[in-house]
Image (cartoon, rainbow, N blue to C red; front, side, top):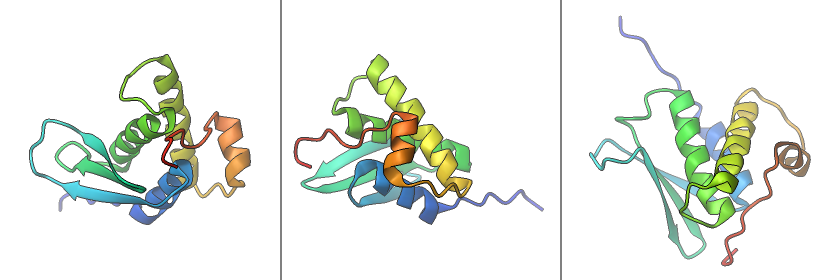
Length: 122
């Protein structure tokens, strides 16, 4: 029997929505794009695309989500030190959310360095 991978999509999505400070939609696909994920903005709508050919485990999904959310929070497409620090903080925040840590949003974000979205449209 093949290994079964269970991904807790609802919990990941709820935590991503807290980080983004607005609703986040997920687009899951196996259509080859050459990218593990992408962040799309349509007005106030945030869509995170995840390529299921690359994201085969919950840890992979968390890594993609943190990567894309860090772009939103920092407000840049660059992969500089500020973005990397934010990505690491968001990744830890998402991991904690999956462990069921129920800290208040602001306390947890302050502890992890997450500052919320700097998107000017927000």
